[in-house]
Length: 443
Image 1 (tube, one colour):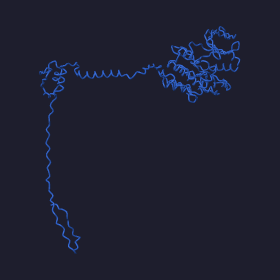
Image 2: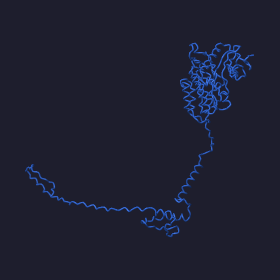
Image 3: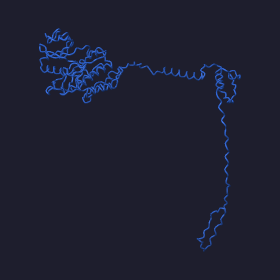
């Protein structure tokens, strides 16, 4: 029996295994206690079939060292590593209370709340910013490797499992250690893997992590992954060849923001050059696409027989008409009309207006009974008439008559007849120098 398959085992006389937390494809994770410090920790033990592979063991430890050197609060803290008495490699990390993102989605039985999803995404990006700055590509981002622990009533994210991460550059290391993960073998989770990982590109960079995070955002917002299939190969081929259904088209009932849909689809672009180029860029784009409101409430469909709200429109029209009629009936006094007042107002409206009274005199007005009556002491109109000052009469200035302009006598033009020209005498040449004026001459 494998000694680490049972609890209550002690590793290197320091870590006592308490119970099994979980098991994955490469390792098992136990809750343990540090015997010397009396501190609860988590111990990750590499599986026995991989423990005999020296290359796998070397990658396991060196990549654990790289994750430990990141030093970001959103990445699980690794405190120790070593080998058991049976030669199995193990890593010691901080013990966390909470649940994985996968357990949260399953417990929700649907998509997560919008604000909660975006808050988790933001913290994952903060962890990726720190890891990518150290030249570490996770390559296995999925909800199972994101742990959510409560902190002051809020979700606090820890990124786990750098076991198959690809170290492209380590500061202060030799060149022969800059490529620790062997190429030629597929590594990752089929539902969240980037297309370039499926094609087995030798140099997968940090943008593969951004693609996987885009799939996780899709999963949190819609409650399902973009690609499924009957086999792992079907899913991998869809990641390479097919476009995902837009989240708003998949879940129109959620009313997702259009900007957030574009953000998610850009992260899942097939070509790495079409995605966000860095985790910092993706983090800034998230702030722009983020909205403070959660999923809006869905308005129920009134049904095919429902029409426009004509009753509401009719009611508003009736109220407005009644108010208009009441205003004209009440007039300025604001008293309800009676038969007498209506008759008097009708006769007053039909009768011509009386001539203005002279200053200082009071004009008697007929009352409702027809008798002449003056303004009483209680009449507001009478008091206003008495107290109103009479404006002074404006003197009229007589205009000076304009003198008539003197008319010039007309001179009649008399036309004087001119004598007829002499008759032509045969054989006599007329005198060309002598000219006769045939025009009329004025006298």
